Length: 193
Image 1 (tube, helix red, strand yellow):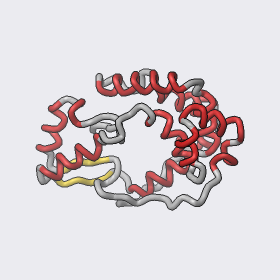
Image 2: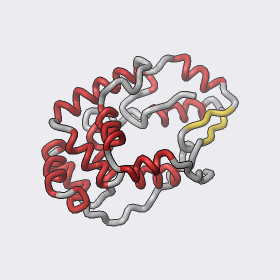
Image 3: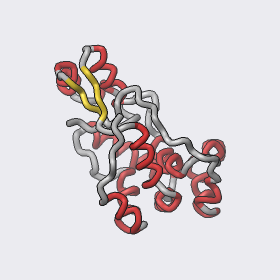
């Protein structure tokens, strides 16, 4: 079992033995099946209204007016995801690169959950309250940069979860929405992909 980041880390930054093991496997399981683009159709959300003026203005300060403008009619999850993505190489997609290595080696690939199921859970989890909490807990753009660099370094060193941007998210989960805690602890019905 090997957990991957969706972007920011390329296949060249992980131990070569992981790629060797995937190429030698009978089946390689991924979070979602490679090529599964099933997703929730986002309604035309009004993100500024959902976040409220203080959080929306702070988000604009953190990511800039142009990027914030691109989020105006998107789900709150995109505001939460965009913060660490400011300093990650979006052309590096480890899970996609590992799936390609498996496919090139003629290894069967499967997913642990469908893309639609994952998207539904993320949309239920990353509410406007969660996004607002993450945005407001992030004081400066430099804080994002420092946390993202630390987290990427920790991941590559095999020490995920030692601070970095994930701490901002965990802070919300520790003190935030009680309904969110219930959602995260109740068993979910998985859609088979």
